[in-house]
Image 1: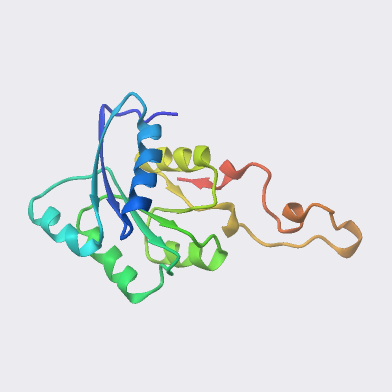
Image 2: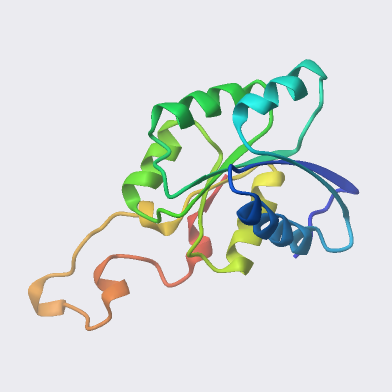
Length: 170
């Protein structure tokens, strides 16, 4: 899957250089034949120079690693990055419902976690670049089947839809 524009400018924010390289590799696969200009910084405070220079981005990937997006420094970081007027997608090592809810409540446009399939992450980013929002199926209701109708499939018992793309919401 590729992004429809001729060139996309992506801001990648991650404190860990090796993880930044990995995320950049996924982004390069996403953009395949289209041009992609990735600007990498290690913290949102470095974005101040970009804000002053009127640089524009189509999307901002903000990696919080294993830390919670609810931590004060990340909330402050999101507020700083918001000044760039681009959709913000959180990349996290935490794939819990509470982390996804925290990201949603922070007003970002997407939440990706390091345990998701690369193809799904690429589709979610492409969708976000086209104006959509992506939050994983972990946000769907956790309805449990009755005792009589309990499935042996744990995914079904958690109420997770078979098609993970059903959580793409515009």
